[in-house]
Image 1: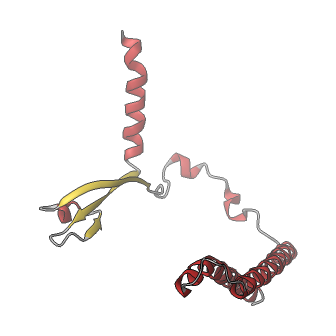
Image 2: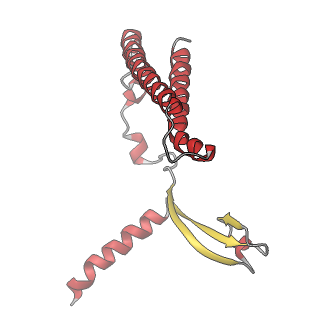
Image 3: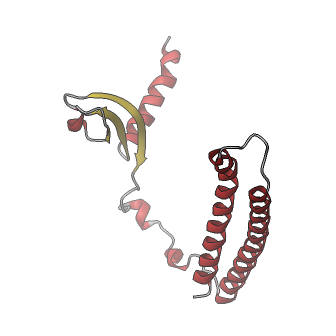
Length: 165
């Protein structure tokens, strides 16, 4: 009988030890008087409102500085953590630049294809599209694809520009 409780006691001990370094955050979704949603982690904001628990997150707090025998036994070479040499850093930067340039080239090709598909679709009129709104509805996904590729190209160009600094 005692053995059945042993794992539970060990688990509770671990949870209590972990709770010293962890903090639970609860997120509530409340509706105010006009029906608008309000998200809050402050329990006081939930008073007098219809609220439901949306999320329960456990934030783990970093351990504070060590003291005592554990700190005294630390290796004196801690400050000599393996560092990246300037040649390794330059090599990594070159690899990163190469990857970004490849991604940029493929994204520019995808953008050109998307623009070509959009142009073809704009020049094609289907029989059931007597109303221009239907034409716009058919073209909208193609326009969104072009916009997405344009934004990706701009982001990659910005990233390459930041890399060259």
